[in-house]
Image (cartoon, rainbow, N blue to C red):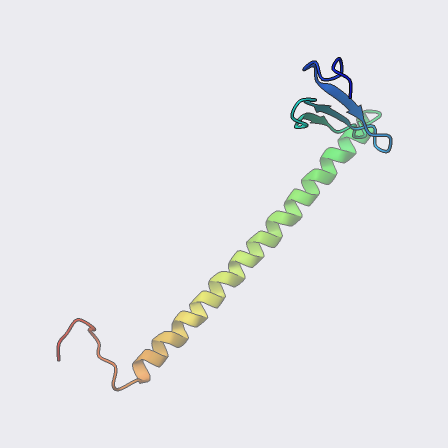
Length: 101
């Protein structure tokens, strides 16, 4: 690399595959900025469709998380009930672990 290229001005690199753009510091090699070329909606109908799909995905993810949380609550309740029954069945177990008896 020539001294002129290393003058401190950032390098802009364009990806030949996706047309993404990277801004790179020539001295350190650190990526300063990355811009995704992305595919912008061509018209309002495409944009509306993208927003509706995002909303649908968000709703599905929320329902999945909600069901997982409900199942988690049931599982914890069942484990607690089993531990309580097990503690009640053990005759050698003291009620108060701090009681010196």
